[in-house]
Image (cartoon, rainbow, N blue to C red; front, top):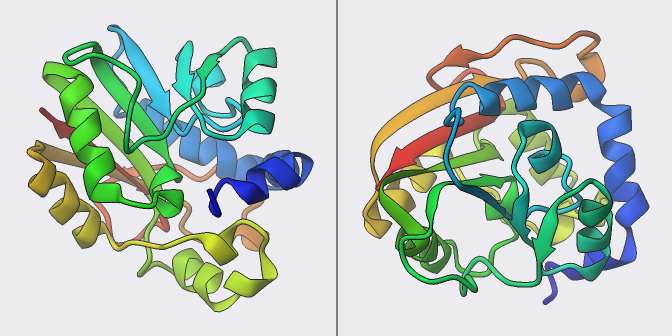
Length: 209
């Protein structure tokens, strides 16, 4: 629950980040959209306030923070109380699942990925977006962890570590997009995304069951 607490205490501070960093936010949306299936039954796990699910057309989400769920519902999301490590769904329910920066706040990402694998249909996919620990923004966030009410409780991961955890859960056929090629304060337009990883600070991995 420690990692949920900042989202309960500071929902407006969370929302303000997206307003303050609107170009980086839009770039992240584009990088995710490039990997997202055009149809099928989808869910966002760690839906937060619906900042990604709503513009991406995902109507169902799981979120442990009550304050975040309330805002997500205002954005038209059916936000359900729950944790990624114990998803409240039967097996083989979804064509795709999305997780955006959620991995930073998981108590047990390995268990969470196994849970996502369980609820996906055969051939379904997980799309995960996160700040690469080894990237410029990732290093900056780690250097200033104590300055952020959110990131002081976060754990950052490298792309290779996330790939390893996904493989252990059974995922395969990885595709990558990346964006955010400058520090956030320097971004004055929506940056493009490109395939691969290792250059952009925000990385999206699509992995198939």
